[in-house]
Amino acid sequence: MATSKETIDYFLLQTAGAGSMRARSMFGEYALYCDNKVIGLVCDDQLFIKITPIADSYLDESHNGLPYSGAKPWKLVPEEKWEDKLWLAEFIRETAKYVAVPIKKVRKPEKQT
Image (cartoon, rainbow, N blue to C red; front, side, top):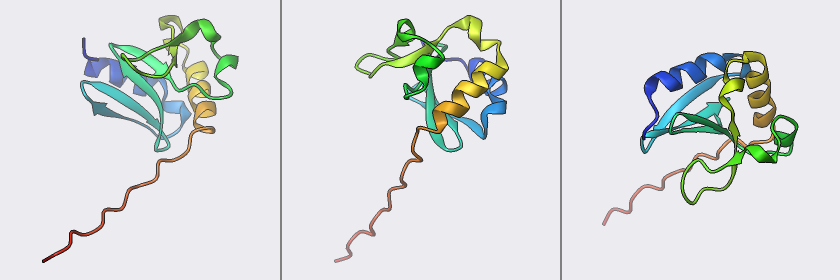
């Protein structure tokens, strides 16, 4: 079951206070970015936040979950927390502090023969 566009719009609205938020579609699911850092995944209409050193202070280990088969564990945010904009924005903002900005790959020009 793929994530609906309405779910993404809702999460972007709920997390607007965290920083510069955006979502990118990937294989029918979505990656959530805060200040150009991947901090979350939305898979099957469920919100997963990257595990960082501060993650357990927001959600204990019972909330660890796999967004897709073969993935590393992420924090599965329970639905009752989706409504708490302040809590969600703080969790994402603090998570983003521990996530590096991805390095852009520079393509080398093809050799001409």
